Amino acid sequence: MESAQNLVGRVLVSQQVIARLSAARDAIEKEHRDKIWAIGRGFTDRIQALEHEKNVVIQELTREKESAYQGKANEIIELREVQIKVKRMLDFLHLDSTRDLSIPDDAPQMRNGYRGTRHLESLGYIVDERFLKVKLFIAENDKSVNKYSLCALGQTIFYEALLKLPRNYGCPFYTKGHYEVEYVFKDWPSVTEITAWLAKPVNREKVMLQVKGEYDTVEREYTDTVKHYKASDFKPLMWAVCEKCGYFYTDLDDRTRADYERRQDSPECPHCSRFDEATQKTIPQPMTLLERRVFDSKEA
Image (cartoon, rainbow, N blue to C red; front, side, top):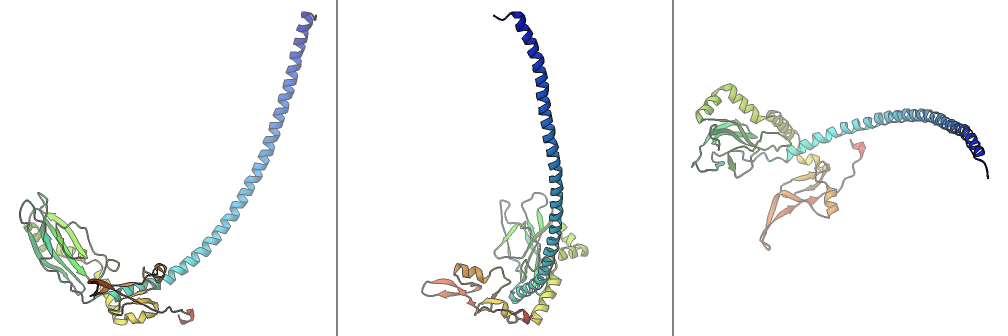
């Protein structure tokens, strides 16, 4: 049997050898890591350089695209200007200039409550133009202190897309018909204070300008359009027309021929209808589809 002295000697020698081998092993591992890091760093630098080169090329392509794209977009904007102009002219030609715009004093109806019959007083027209009429009213509201409201009620032949007029749906009354102007200016404790405030020219002028909006400009634009043009001048743009009243749809309208063709449906005139004796029902007037026209750009 091996002696203890020999065993101890072998252990001491093994410890020294293991220490040297471990140091050599760790040196190999460190050398490997250093080489991997160096290789990675080299590739990282090359990758970053390639990424930078790629980004430079992409940026240049993007600038070229943006320049070409914006050029086309500007051309489209310029071309659409005439479409927007003609669409507005066609909207003017659709209007009914014979519409009765008068506002009777009993147009507003009060909601009488627990306090009994509420005060309602007409102050007459603040605007009395050919195509815009606005009447002022004093109406009692539900408030305990500022109990009286100065309200405006008005009608015009121009719808909102053509002329923006004030609406705030705060009037303490209701109306049976539609009014383009329905607006509350302010509330006062008494009728006397309202009439005194409105009697001052500066305040009356302020109210008038507020309810009138851009009417003067739109009215001049409308009268100039109907003076120089008629609906038939734009027949090449029309795809449907009402034989009864002349109402029409064009390629510039939100409702397009393609929409109806896709639904296999026919457009109906929004203004005309007839009474069917057989069904005892009111039937909308169908519109006549016009023949498609191929437009040659040389005609422009």
